[in-house]
Image (cartoon, one colour):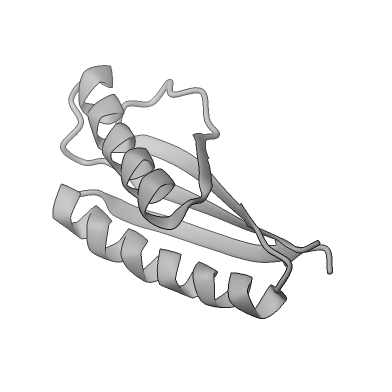
Length: 98
C-alpha cells in the first residue's frame, strides 16, 4: 500500500520567541490535519525559534490519488504559509511503496 511523505522546511521571520513559533506551527498543523486528513508532526527539536521542519504522511490504496493529494497539499501549504507570514524554504515529497 503506497504512502505519501512530504517534508517541509519553514522559516518564521516574525517569531521572536518560542511562543510565536509554536503558534505558527500549531496553526499549520491544525489546518492540515483536519482539512486534508493527513498525519502531521514537527520533526526538529525546536531549538531555533525562526525555523521548523514538518513531516506530513498520507496512505491510500491508489498511487494516483496520493500524487494528486501531494500536489493539492503543496499548493495549500504555499497559500496558507503566505497568510501566516511563514516562508517555505524547501518541500520534498515522495511516494513510498507500491
